[in-house]
Length: 66
Image (cartoon, rainbow, N blue to C red; front, side, top):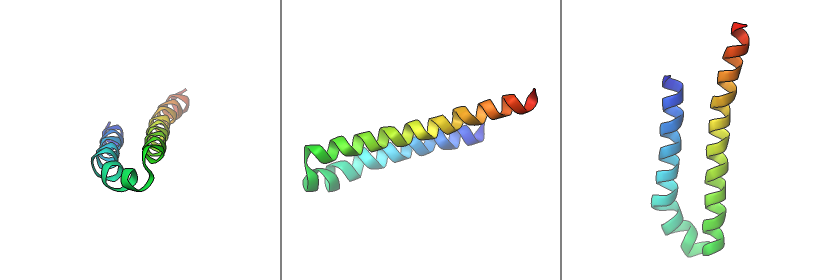
């Protein structure tokens, strides 16, 4: 359970940093609306990737028990 909590907290920290600092102060002034769109897409892909590793880890544990 602790690995799951660490990953979920990591996703939260990533989004907090991204939307609290990186997007408004770095990406938007430099790249405008296209930069924000790209940053949001990257953040979503990273989150989906992390959640997919959680799902794969659960499936591997179930298969080992069989």
